[in-house]
Length: 348
Ligand SMILES: NC(=O)c1ccc[n+]([C@@H]2O[C@H](COP(=O)([O-])OP(=O)(O)OC[C@H]3O[C@@H](n4cnc5c(N)ncnc54)[C@H](OP(=O)(O)O)[C@@H]3O)[C@@H](O)[C@H]2O)c1
Ligand SMILES: [Zn+2]
Image 1: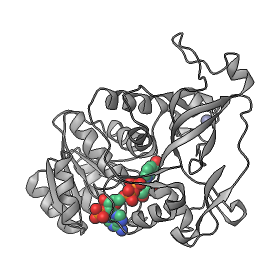
Image 2: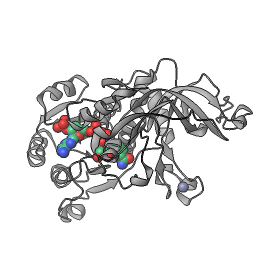
Image 3: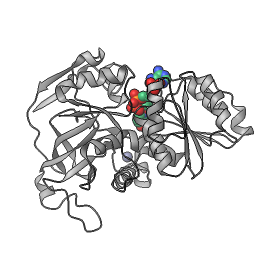
Image 4: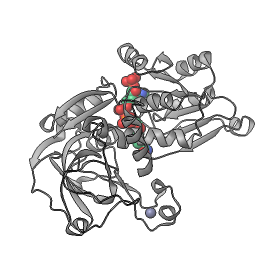
């Protein structure tokens, strides 16, 4: 089979197509014919050498978390009923259309036992979707209804699961006003659509006027055209003081976001695209009861709910571009250039 491998850490130019042996399913495993695998900034960090998760000795490395495809084969124990889902449903069988929950958890630590599973002290993520075939744990597969396309499904695991879990962690209520700085990428677009689907109102920001139009099209209630954290804070306050700030940019967006947030507001942080530090005043935390909440990925149950929301027509993830496996380098170059709106999807 062909894979798109990272052969170095020089950015998109380090992505090359290689040939590997087809995987064989072992105990509790399934081989998926990958039909779509969306890319995330997480993969870009890796190929740019910014992730501590992947070092020289792991090269060549096949990334890709968001596997959607058809089950080609399952391990012998799975054929005999292992991995059957609860509720009397049959287990995973060849031919099933599935999406993978990329969470990898130990299943035994205190957090796995008490939940939520994304707090697992050994938490890690599946990689290997940028390939014609992927070897996955059968328990991490979510069966797709016929009405949910592979392209929509592959958008959901990382971006939408993260955004959805952040909104849950931020105690989102209908009618809340949610500020989403950098609302045009994976997590940002997901947050805008989910805020709308859950009955709240969004403020989305972008530095590009072209992408601002698209933000309005997908239902952002307010759009701020700026990439400057202080200007965004001022314009946000003119609209209203947000109840929730979805912060995947970090850096100066953190201080500015806290300054714009209402008394009792909640900022949920999942990333640091714009930097890892920000100088903040501690006073608002006790004077205004503001909260800062960290969040990573979501739970498999979140992913199942998201599949249900797409099936029910609550939203359709916008996909900016699809690429053949051989064009995976171009997909990463497009992400790096900041021209994309929504998800970029590789179709191996
Ligand atoms: N902890 C977790 O579980 C988790 C899960 C998913 C993602 N993340 C993190 O969340 C972040 C977003 O991920 P993603 O996959 O959604 O990325 P993405 O699709 O590349 O995000 C693009 C968005 O970020 C904005 N942006 C990009 N570079 C920027 C910069 N230097 N300054 C300000 N804005 C910038 C863009 O704004 P313009 O419209 O102005 O171009 C656009 O709105 C990443 O840091 C990622 O690592 C964390
Ligand atoms: Zn655990």
